[in-house]
Image 1 (cartoon, one colour):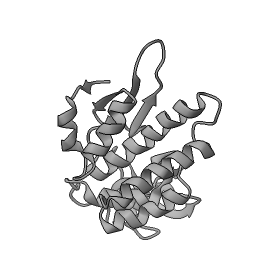
Image 2 (tube, one colour):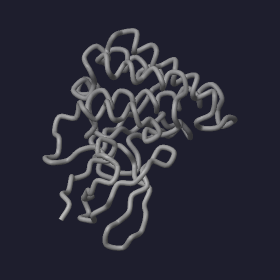
Image 3 (tube, rainbow, N blue to C red):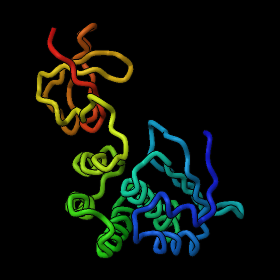
Length: 209
């Protein structure tokens, strides 16, 4: 995976105003090797604990907007803090991690770093953090509004009415169906096969022929 090594001061360009000093304090205190990577479809960030004389290692996707970058970093820092306190004796996204992640979120929320709509969406995360970013549907929908570049004629799947046609980036056309738990049941028009699709994915709206 191609990566970019950044001097600590350059990290400020990826973070919301008012958060840099707090973040750097954590990184220095715990001797974190932070890497900004190119976009990864499967994960937004990753944490690997210290071992064999090596530093803690955190990687964050560099294509995220500043607020999503910070929240992803806090998610991974919570893994670091969990390992520091409990080692490998607890579940990776168990109650210990949830408690520490919630504490980090509250700390940064109190400093008024986030816009009001993101702060409101974060309240649910504080109460019961999800194991993955995709589990935070309401939060992600708010965060993606702050992306600097929006694809032309694209919307989030959650914003389309049920029954609407849409095209994925791979060119396949689907019809949006009902929501099942946290994902939409969508039928591919060509094959009739059904797929479970994330509400936050960006799709191109299609007109009925």
